[in-house]
Length: 230
Image (cartoon, rainbow, N blue to C red; front, side):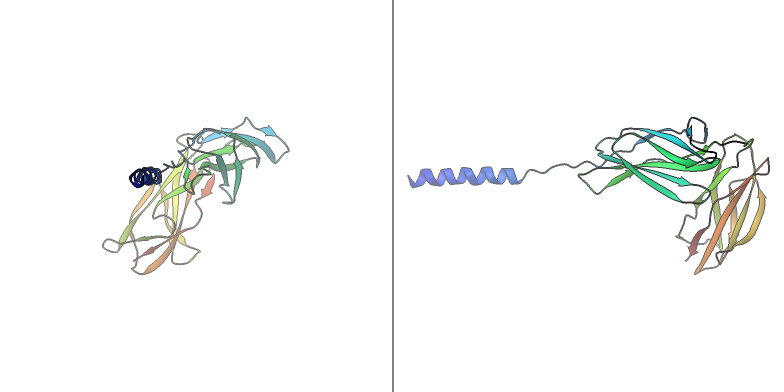
């Protein structure tokens, strides 16, 4: 009898141990694929609400392992951002007309704190009386904001990316660089999207921005960035 009880206890302990060894695989949300408004487009499909505002429909493809989405929209003139949370794969948002915007989706799961961000697209919310559209603000690619860089022979390279609604209308770029938050112009009428061999000093923080100019005389400003040379 004692032997039977011992065997029964061993089986229960074994089964209990097997159950405790099981692990639950939690998957991070995948990346949403953007649909509308299209990249670098003039958005004319919105519903006009007033002379200055319209309602724009944003759509994207569903991402796996996702419960909700954050739709993030950035005014590229003011750098102000808004966030709208939804369980759907579309949302209508009231925006200013004659204004460039950037947008992206953050996929969120209730089972993990990890989130996944989509690519970012840019578009113009169209409005009355516009014949030409200013370039989108240049996207700074290197050095990025608050990056710490090493200078080779006391110089670094600055790079950025320009984009426009109408192809081939960017005329040039002006680069501003300095050690305070009001940098002075360092190079003007640059036709490339880079400026190489820029002289810098070690242990110094620099501020810089890029102004994009198109063939119609329209301009846009990247906004102020900073980096530190170690």
